[in-house]
Amino acid sequence: MLTQGMNRKISSSNTVVLDESVDAYPVLQIKNKYCTASVALHGAHLFHWHPLGEEPVIYTSPSAVYKLGKAIRGGIPVCWPWFNKHPTNSSLPSHGFVRNKFWDLTAIEETAMSTTLVFSLSSNSETRKLWEAVFEVSLRITVGEKLECSLTSKNTASSNAGFTPSNSLSIGGALHTYLSVGSIDAVEISGLEEVSYIDTVGTEAVRTQLGRVTISEEVDRIYTGTTTDIILHDKLLKRKLRVSRKGSQSAVIWNPWIEKAKELADLPDDGYKNFVCIESANARGDVYLLQPGESHTLSTNVTIE
Ligand code: TA6
Image (cartoon, rainbow, N blue to C red; front, top):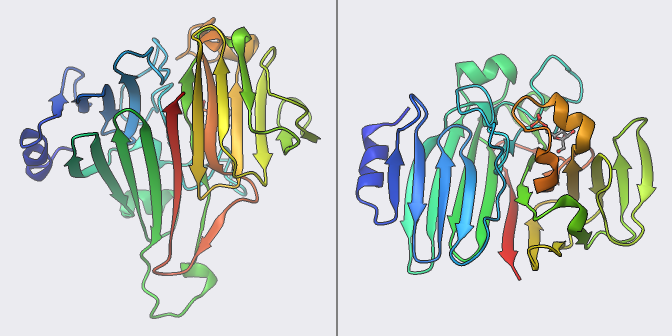
């Protein structure tokens, strides 16, 4: 899990310490001039970001599970290389498999304004049991006054055999960001007005967003053909969170509401009141076909206004 090289990077940093308080589950605790943050090596999973002088921005369930093979309920789960169910094989894990594996810490970069952690995960015999592909995926997380997260997928197959269907990669996924809210009935989401979306609650239907998004029932929507910033207006906390995206033309808005929250063992029954997911995604038709040597970057940035 943690190599000597990783330990050296951590011990020579000024703003990152290793937290091993959970057995076999290393967490990197960050504290710099502008924020505190927590990132698990498991899933390269940021699950806490608290800018100084602000309410925490990232939501994590108090019932979250911290163990190999189970993604933390909250934070920014890295859903990759597909979003939600695999398009053709429902026996494969929902939201892909990298959020359930330990990544390598490959770099720590510190400036006066921020701390950046870089993680990577490459294909191996384990991943090939799930997905016959040769890849490297890396995640850069930068925390300071704002949060920046970018996921780069690279097709590292040899191109000796030319570009054949067997060595091209179809990449989907999402940065599945859980944003803290004062109370779910006191938020509005702008930036998606008039955008078409796939409503996946009940019988799937395609609809158009009329006005701002408000949450007063289960919401599970894939907005399509959109690249604009999405803004969460929190009337209770009196703040706006701006989510800007790159490498994404689909965005997901999710809140489980009452019944679905009860079905989630790692979320309190009333947990739905305290978050909404605004996800920078490559969902449904918004996927990228990478030939050997090609890469794609999906990013999400969160700023407080
Ligand atoms: O992003 C929305 C969604 O696809 C919902 O359908 C719901 O399943 C959510 O992700 C959480 O998925 P998870 O596998 O983390 O419980």
